[in-house]
Length: 320
Image 1 (cartoon, one colour):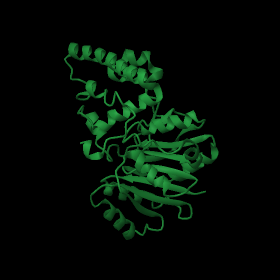
Image 2 (cartoon, rainbow, N blue to C red):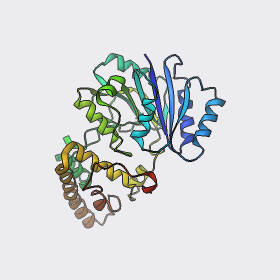
Image 3 (cartoon, rainbow, N blue to C red):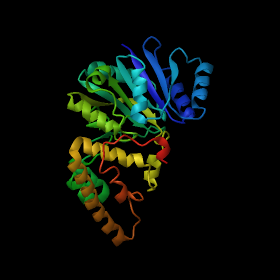
């Protein structure tokens, strides 16, 4: 049994070094290989991480692989996957800290549940408070729920609500966060690599959906625990939380996802449902004198790539 751990870096060398430090007592040299893929950071990330690996004597299990281009989350992980043959791959965000025993626990679940193609741990904050990390598919109905942000609508359509509450027992969600996920080699052989048409976001639900369509199950395994600092590897989550206008690739990925799994008309339906929900929330906000709960320009930006939703992602320098 061999395991390849892929950590993707883009200008977060200190986070990567902390993540590697958490792996020091968890990796088994005769089983595990850790590959840090630098996504063309253009700073001193590679030098800093390589210096830490040398200084801490991690070179017998960790190495840095510099990608010549920043193709995004899927592309960077694919670079790491293609660089090494393994029985399983653990995709790990740079803003994670692996708790003691988490890797062995995930591998135990892999052996116990051969039908599970992807296995995720519980994600939590440093104080051990759990995070929601398992979900139902994004759908046109879930777009109405999100934009309406109104309890009666959410209750009426609750089977389409994307977030699934934290569970203390294993279960099978429709998709799971790729901040940390174990993927069988057989899944990659059958389904293929991650879709590089997404720069960031919606890539994890896309891959889980493809795996489930191929007959694999997604397993959430809360016995394994991993700290997720959330947002440390990107700014979009903080921008959305502040209701600011996020980077264009968020909406471009959304358009790609809906067009890919619901068709061109499905993308239009998702946007229509979002607008219906927004009409509901806007009326409530005006009546109660509340600030908008959506991001700046969101009603405009959901039409990103409307005419060509499957176009390749924008280059990084055009995403600012």
